[in-house]
Structure formats: structure tokens, C-alpha cells
Amino acid sequence: MNRPALKPAPVAAPLFDPAAETMPRAELAALQLARLKTTLRRAWDNVPHMRRRFEARGVTPDHLKTLADIRHFPFTGKADLRDNYPFGLFAVPREDVVRVHASSGTTGKPIVVGYTAGDIALWSDLMARSLVGAGATRHDIVHVAYGYGLFTGGLGAHYGAERLGAMVVPVSGGMTERQVTLMRDFGANVLCCTPSYALNIAEVAESSGIRRDALKLRVGVFGAEPWSEQMRAELERRLGLQAIDIYGLSEILGPGVACECTAQAGLHGWEDHFLFEIVDPKTLEPLPMGATGELVITTLTKEALPMVRYRTRDITRLIDEPCACGRSHVRIMRVTGRDDDMMIIRGVNVYPSQVESVLVGLPGVAPHYQIVLTRRHALDHMTVEVEVAPDVPQDDETLARVARDVQHRIKSTIGISCEIAARRPGEVPRSQGKAVRVKDQRHLGG
Ligand code: DLL
Image 1 (cartoon, rainbow, N blue to C red):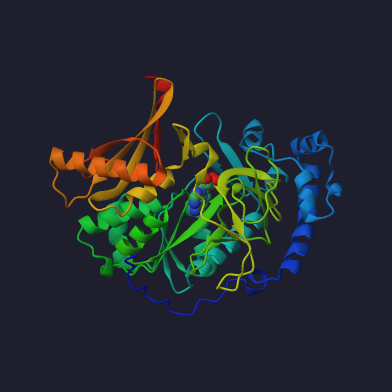
Image 2 (image 1 turned 90 degrees about the vertical axis):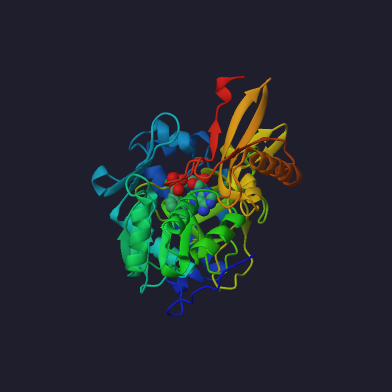
């Protein structure tokens, strides 16, 4: 892939927390076991709902003798949070909660999560650790364009960058032209935002005549939504940075549960604070290391909201091979999608990010897309709205040719038949935060 030469980090990037990040497996496992016991006890003693769930499974915290015994404990899901809205799962007195965040969700009540002062300190540390892994240093200027507010992205990145000692520019999302000007004028080195918003930023910079070299960006810390290797290459080329994948979710912490290092070979999951499992999403049985399934996370040190076996719905796999960086923690491979985002088109399972990996980098096509699902004759039907690149002719014939080409590529790579609606530049909506990749119109019938 056509990658630009990367600007070197101003100082060699050390680990943020060397003893914790390189802890040998046996020591890490012993630490996890001790912390897991404390977490189960905390949930049992302080959260009536959790105690009832444990009792229904016939377990008490004392049943956990080894890490593998976690399989006997009940799962937690979004419904548990929703049913106990807003503060019912908190394990500490309300007065000890210094911050809440919430995710809107698509239906019903939002999900509310809480943090003690200790939780905020932990989150800041893990975000700082993630940023250092990504190649950031305290000498950097960190432009935070994740949304601030109830979403965890903005404040999570903000506290982490401050903890690192970097200079933070708390811009939040939106007003993209101003963002680009500030990035250039301040000389931002690190950009934190969703990958889809980074693409929007790249486009606005180009159309404002701000060339890649006028920006001092070196590292992009991109996450909060699935994205593809092709999108990574596109962002690296257009913004002149190394694009790093960061993962997290509000229910567990926010951003900083796992993050890639500069080797870009999977996201180091911070195992001293979380226990990661992969389960079969249908049978819910634990799967062996390396197998693909649903990621399930137990918090090991969270105070306000300890989570036991939280079903993330995110599909991925873990690997525990040594990484070039020396960190010993397992790596969570790129999350391709959530099991509730999976579409089944004529019997073929497909995630939006697979469509993305076909579109991005295709000649004549811009990397903006949206998927529209409809139902025809009781079958799900997929239309992909793609945009032709600004440098190709915009006549109807060219649009039809691009559409045929994309349709053929999708058929031959993913194996599904879909319709393509080719749009002119600017017609596909741009992202301000988490991109809405799928417009589901199946309820409208047809
Ligand atoms: O998106 C936290 C976050 C903020 C992560 C900023 C990274 C950067 P939620 O809004 O609760 O929290 O959404 C969590 O987003 O379960 C995944 O489905 C998805 N997600 C998060 N990071 C990634 C990623 C934040 N790197 C949900 N790749 C998660 C794929 C991701 N999906």
C-alpha cells in the first residue's frame, strides 16, 4: 500500500507503565485471580441485582477458585443496565460517584454508567497507556475531536492525554473547517476521533487547500466504530499519520480498554484491569484462544460499576503471541462488527465493514458509503450508496459504469448480490462522530 514516510516520534516512546505492561503470564494470571475475587465479592455484597443473578445460577463468589471458573458465573448484558436504570447497578453509595456517562441506544432508555474518583484515575491511566502505545508522548499536542458530553470518547481521550502530560485541544466534533484551521495553526501531532470523522477532516482539509504537509499530524487514535484496513491506508495516506485502532465501550470504561501499539498488529487488551473471554454467541460456551466469537469482558478493578461477564456483542478473536513491542497482554484482533450489525443477505452473513473494505481504495470511487436495507418479497435486500470520486466525469453513463463495477466487486469478494446507487460528490452524508453505516428500512415493507 502506498504509505507516506512517517514522521518520527520526537523522543523514543517508552512504555507508560512498564511493569504492568510486560508482566509475565503467571504473574498476570495471579493478579487477575486476586482482583477477580474482589470484584465478584463487591458485586455480590453491593448490587442486589447481581446477587440475584448469581443465586439464580447457584453460585457465590466463593465458587471461584481459578480464572477458568468464571464460566460458571452469569453474563451481564445491556438489558441488565436498562432494567436497573439509572443507577441500580452501582456498587458504591451515590455520593461516591463523581461522573456519569450515558449511551443513547437506539430504543428505550439510555444506558447510564458511573465512575468513582478512583475509576476516573484508572481510566485516565489506561487511556494514557493506550496513547503511549499508539506513539504519543508528553511533548505532543493532542487534538480531541471525539464528541464531549455523555459519550465517553471526548472526555476519555482528554483525561488520558492530560495524564500523559501532553497539551490537549478539546475541540469535540463538528465545525470541521475550524478544526482543520486549528490543527494547522496549533501544530497538532495527535488526532483523536472516529475513523469516519477523520475521513471527513481529511476531505475538508483538502478542499480548504490545507495540504498534508502543512499539518504536523503523526498519530491518529481512531475507534468507537468498526473500520477496515483499507480505511486505515486511506487515512494514513491522506493525513500523513500512523492510524492506530483503539477500542472500548461505556459499559466497561469508555475508550482505552484495548489499543494497538505502533506495530499495528492487534489491540493490546489491558489484562491487569480486565478479564477477556471469547464465547460462542449462540451456545455461550467459552471458546479457545484464537477462535472467533463474541468478546465478553469482566472488570477487575472498577469500583462504581463492576461488570461481570459483560456481553459486548462485538465479534473478534484473541491472540496471545508475543508482540514486537514487548507487551505481554493478549491482543484483541480488529473488531469487524457487532453481532447485531450483521446483515444476512440471501443467506450470506455480511458486516458493513466488509463492504467498506471493498469500496475504499477502488479507482473512481470515494470512500463514503451508506447501506440501505429493504425487504422485498420477504427477502432482505441491500443497496449500497457509493459516491464517485471528484476526479471522474459526473455524467449518467460514468455513474452507471462505476455502479456496475462496484456491484461486480462486491459479488466477487463478499459473494452477495446487491444494488448500487452511484451518487455525485458530497451526496452521501458525512460523519461527525460515529458513522451511521446502515439505514434499515425493512420495517417499511415492500
Ligand atoms: O465507542 C468508546 C470509545 C470511544 C472507543 C472512543 C474508542 C474510541 P460506546 O459508545 O459505548 O463506547 O460504544 C461501544 O463501539 O461495543 C463496539 O461495537 C464499537 N467500537 C468501539 N471501538 C471500536 C473499534 C465507545 N476500535 C461500541 N473497532 C463497542 C470496532 C468499536 N468497533
